[in-house]
Image (cartoon, rainbow, N blue to C red):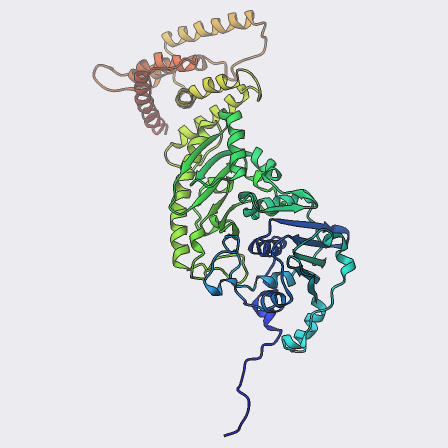
Length: 554
């Protein structure tokens, strides 16, 4: 047997590409990895400085920092895990965000050159430069990690950021791929939206170009928010700001508390779907899933679609920390969760049930606030929904401006008319259609008017002439000023379906019952419950009898 050294694995640098150097597609993901590392290192502050002219940026934290041994055997060791000892929390007790420890590959994906320097308290800076062009050549030449040493870092480039820096890590990204096109407001929104632990934990702050990122950077989204569903009891400054805003104009908003086992967060809705496009014209805010404060899945509604209109109005943040346990269920790209994971699948099932409750609330509240709801929701008939829609469009014009003394009172008055308006609008529509169809039938059949009908038409013509005189009106009012256009259903019915009402049902009998309540509707009166019931029954009878009469036109 040949005497030789034991065989061992030798890893090519090309494994970096396979593991994920090219998997990180979004700038927010790269920021997320760097900020997450700072969180895990017990930093209290993370500072981001952007130089758009040079397409570069610095990320600086005041975390524990790294020794030379830490840098070589932990940071540069792909796959090294802080959790290998079984610990899930940092020295300060924070839940670790990092898991696979290949997230550092994200730092290699967005810039031509990345310099990392770090120091522990009382120590000196250590670090190195990762030049992607040189790394690409090393990968092409199939070199091993030992054959690719990091470059030497230059202190001059860091002078501005090392001044007063006692411990922590600083990373410099040079020549960011595709440049840094995002403005300060947009970057601030991205950070405020996706790095929730910076807003939820008072011991951790993120600064962008010297300005602390807070929920106030989402002010424009808050101002466009209409309804709110709070899940669990998580203290969230953005939600607190929404509730404060709602309390100032309660007539414009609705809120409800929901309970979902193991889940906290919120879901909200905006006035119009376009209000969710606060990021870019292509990208919209959605309902995002967070685990231990870190974004793990963007827009989870895509996994539980309900095909309901409300979906396009919703956004929110769901926190489900139970997904971070002994099982690794996060994808290598760091931008999702393994789709068929049992715990995640069960969560999505529960989440869908919650969403279905929310879309029901949403439709109810939208109608209450005189806006378009969900046309597929069958709790209202199509006619009821159309009537309420018309009422909403009209009544909104009577709303007083924000700040008006009687705004709330008038809003209550308007809301109190909703049910009656819906019924009256629907009744008037039935009346309008049925009476005009009978008039067309009389014209088609060339039916002669009775003496009584001619006299009734003359009476209304004379009234119209007198009223026009008082109003100094000379224009024609009726498009077809013939006698039938002056007659209501009770007169018209006698011409097309007059029978002995005591012996058999007929249109004339229904029309006689219809007239007093129909006149009340036409004169905008509010009806009693009994009157509504009676009118609904007679309306249906008239509609069916008119359809029967029309079917005999041939």
